[in-house]
Length: 307
Ligand SMILES: Cc1cc2nc3c(=O)[nH]c(=O)nc-3n(C[C@H](O)[C@H](O)[C@H](O)COP(=O)(O)O)c2cc1C
Image (cartoon, rainbow, N blue to C red; front, side, top):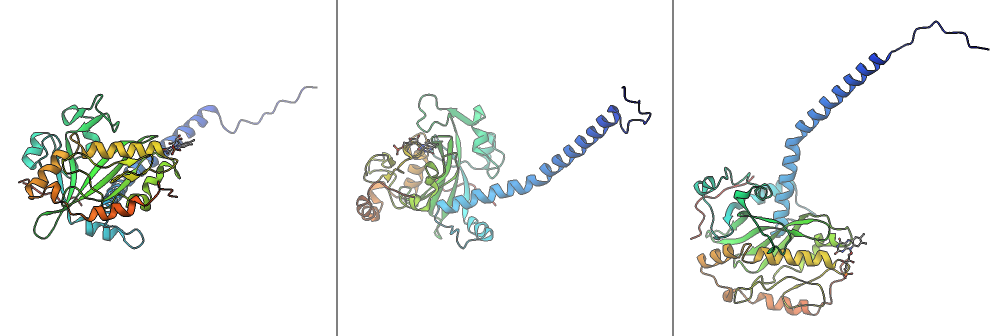
């Protein structure tokens, strides 16, 4: 028996459905675009705050237990932003920056620079940190003492770990040799393994050791087996990340990295690698007793303050 045909009209047809779907899509995309545009300044601000916080962590000037965002902003004011010609080792003043195509030292982004052939060098086979291209001009953060002499300098560093590029900051004291601190703010290493490079206990091992020996050769790194004088113990179970950090430290302290600049600053301030104090040897004596860790005028022509 066949069903009787309904004479009711359909409530909607295909055209109406498509129109409603299109309107919905349009409204949603406008909302998403508006949110993306509206939230962009907040994202940029958060990224800036995070970077400044990590600079202070590397400088030993941030206590996560008590310091607020206001403390970060206030303390960061003590730092001057300088752009360094990595090959020559000198600062660039505003005119020199313009001449090489950098409009503003504060917004200059070295990651962007590595995508620009005029602002970076291809490292080819001479690339121990596996970064591909090196910016010709680096951005460093300098804190001067009351007499105007460098008290510390915070150097951005980067290099490949096991899973991706690790970004961080290395701070040297005014002798441009003794390590004051280190921080890592972006990486893809595994939590509980390579990501332990972020742990305060491991980072603390860097403080007080020397970057160079008396003849100016890089004298530190991460020891992936046993202990080594003036080297930091590797993280057990994370040998590959440890090796990556070691390579990046040696690269950035070396001739291709900040060495020409650090030599220049040391010379200008009348210091030598021989005059670095002997505080380190005491620290090393303590460290040597540890097993492999089982952790769970270069006077700037123009200063720039970065907010
Ligand atoms: C899922 C997974 C994640 C890993 N993540 C890391 C890591 O982040 N860093 C690292 O050095 N090794 C990592 N490893 C271990 C390495 O594969 C390698 O075994 C280790 O680096 C060797 O270190 P060891 O000689 O100290 O044991 C990981 C292994 C697995 C299975």
